[in-house]
Length: 152
Image (tube, one colour):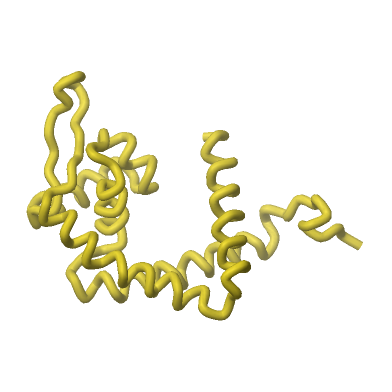
């Protein structure tokens, strides 16, 4: 008999676990995308906007890593956001080789408007969990991501 995860066993990578994580991601992404689509924003655009909301400025490489968006796609997404006057880019005054992305006032206002919709989607996704289970889920996902980010 296989030990349960709570007994310290490691879950198999090629087992159904990857399927569960993928399904959870698709469910939540779908919930969020539906709400964002009504405002003309894609999920990738939201990832960029929400990251910039929490950071004064971000080098493009950092933004790519934080949002898990590849370089070429990120450039296209940021270009779209610039075209919509939701963010802008400037050369880093400390290192002219780096380009920084910033959230515009209009972008900051949009993020504030959309945050309740995102929280609503997250709450809907976890509505069948107790508050304690929801906190534990977030804690475990944070631990999983943080632990694997160190290995990149």
